[in-house]
Length: 124
Image (cartoon, rainbow, N blue to C red):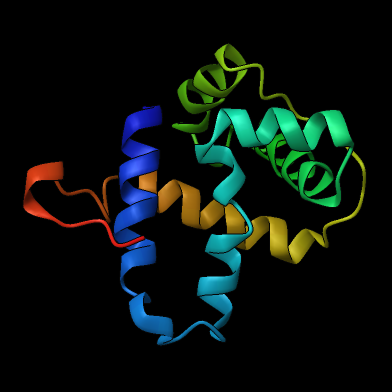
């Protein structure tokens, strides 16, 4: 499940390569969840108690609270927890933004942006 999320995230972000669309709302929503795909960066932000950590914590907490709306979150949250990524409510992200982030993650988990690695090129 975690691999699906990470690869789908990369596929989604690659649509905005070369700076095209970086001002678009959907791109900004996607970039705000990037920390989920990097457990080491997550831990660094957690140790620093950064705003990025607080925002991701709010999102994970929101996902936990809305599992009934997004059934695939249950398995995904388990994979996050196994990486010591846990939700905690800080209240720094507006609910509308959390909803949009959750919808995007749900699209990733439902394979909307899934492609096998050998069929696409990740741009960094």
